[in-house]
Length: 438
Image (cartoon, rainbow, N blue to C red; front, side, top):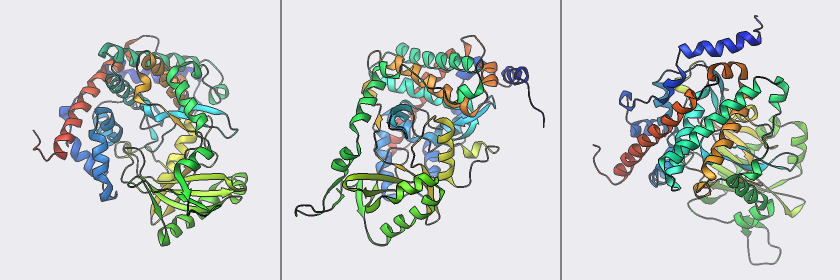
């Protein structure tokens, strides 16, 4: 085995500029598509619950940003048509402004980080940045920003990513692995998310998600149905969900197994979540620990293959897609949910995690005014930290260099892909109304 020197690792990144120049990243060629966006979505949705696909498409058609959230398979196909650096990191896979949020760390402190890894897989680092760039432009347009302001947010995102990666290339690798992003609370959208997370206590979730089973005083609680988004599950299906907690419990660390053993399952529900995940099977389990005032909610979420997988033959993700997501999350986050794990049921793969425990998300309206550019910088810094933990900062910094060409190219790409997303969203809208495709 050859142990590469720091100079060799940095040179590797510089050499990849010949594979794809930094200024080339603005390029987009939608005419090269071998299938329409609607066809790509249809392929990716095979195996999902047909009754929920109409809801998914309605959610996507509400706005270009809504469409973008559910159209990872389309963007994966588009980016695969273009040359890539081949500099691999653990991709978030769905890096957009609403997939960052606040949550409780194992020690109870509130942290803010990337928090959605359903599409996580190893791949070219710039694919995360390009998805984030397009999301910033789309979010900017939806929150009332001028195009120049939205492009500036992308520029500042990538500039911050680049500066942070250069800094990571100069400090000990162990320091990179435990690096914490500070000043988060001073950025208004992040501050709002942290406030939401502070209010999202287990007791708050108990009031929001459950109700007394009867009018009798002291009656046990159960899930409050909110169809179609939350429906109680009983009988054989509920039994199978609870049985699937057995394999999940076995993969947890011993101290987590013990903690889980102190809780008793009370009720099960089927939940519709997100936009891109609609149509996949998602179950919630309500537990009680030391009485009704000690609730725990776990989410058992079906995971399919990452949308990027067909275009990354050398990625070799875990064969269990729940495990793939967990490993991706642990790679990218400094601190993760203590109940994070995976299981299986009916030959399908599931991720298991806590539901609604001190979680707070970013809303598009939070990005109005100066919030967009400030948040763009946070996005860049958090992506840099995550990529540095799973890739090589020296190689990445070697490719990026010290100039502005890379950031400027991605800013232009963000606008170009936002334009294409608007066209694709309109095509979906026409299809829902039964109008012929142009």
